[in-house]
Length: 251
Image (cartoon, rainbow, N blue to C red; front, side, top):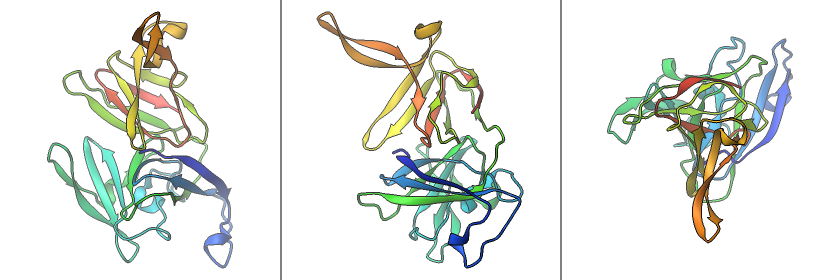
């Protein structure tokens, strides 16, 4: 369950493909085509709100022309899931989302804004197999994007759904602003496969930072060997599971 690829990135001052006339503006707008190959995908937020340059509302971000009634957007914020579902009239309306703990919350226009550096779920209502495209529309910006990580504990982990807004690979061992705990995890969902899990180790050089543990044949015995490396593909969202760590990632 991940964003498979960024198929096309266009920064446009005029977008004639969506009307009969080109509209010239001092602002730079963008349309991002995202190829998806699963019913549920995590989508990165690349843009800001048009003209205001503030946090973009997900109901403005996701274009509806090629979508189907019943398709849904879910945002995880403040410890709760909030949802919007597409109507037959191509409008996003709030709907109640129940989490694993039984808490029911409902999206609304006031809570729909999502910052660059965060991510959201898109759910295709009529998905069976193959791929489909999403189109994300908004205003381009050169401003630095950040992702704030909520601190949790070993007994009560805190989950943050985040994604780099860039169109290049994000190396979590190179970003600034994080203060990880050795119990923290980075979990990257995959289509129909277990999550890729990265763990943090203190140390220097290749002996410290984010990495993965893989079963490796050592002599005649298989052992889990930790190897440094945590590169997240462009556009791919992930869960940061805090069991004590916190901070703000600067992309």
